Amino acid sequence: MSGETGPGLRERKKRLTYRAISDAAIALFLERGFDAVSVAEVAAAADVSKPTLFRYFPAKEDLALHRFADHEDEAARVVAARPAGVAPLEALRRHFLDGLARRDPVTGLNDEPGVLAFHRLLYGTPSLVARLYAYQGRSERALAEALGEAGASGLAARLAAGQIVAVQRILAEENWRRIEAGERAEKVAQDAVAAAELAFAQLHTGLT
Image (tube, rainbow, N blue to C red; front, side, top):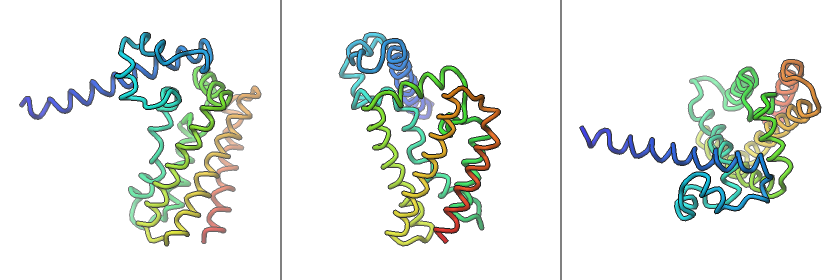
């Protein structure tokens, strides 16, 4: 019995520690700004040592961006898990529209105060923006691999993945820009859906 529960318990503890460290970091970053907070201060706030912190987060920027890390291979997973007979691009279109309907923060269509504060921190910190692009690069590579497994050739898969990831980023940034300017998510939602439909239709035309 211990053999069955041990690894699961260890994994849960790791996830709790991971989340506790990042939550402590983000709270400090939101309060004082990313550049004004040291890694040592984050470790102290999370009640862990610096070596422990770096085992979970190799770079300071990762403390703020773990939420995006969870989505790093999301597009690839959507393609891999799509129902039989559904094209990869259609599966991604449905997934993005579902995210808009759920007000997933990754789509930019979320006006909760905590989400807005986090986005201001992210887009207002150059080193975080740079790190985010690195995450998106890995997302592109994972999606290209999934598209390759779905039948696309190597270069075609890479080109398609780059376009898809770029479109999703632009859509999310536009939604966030409007909400940051003072519009409510409910007001932006209809336009966000129309923009997503247009973007994926253009992708379909070009990629087909």
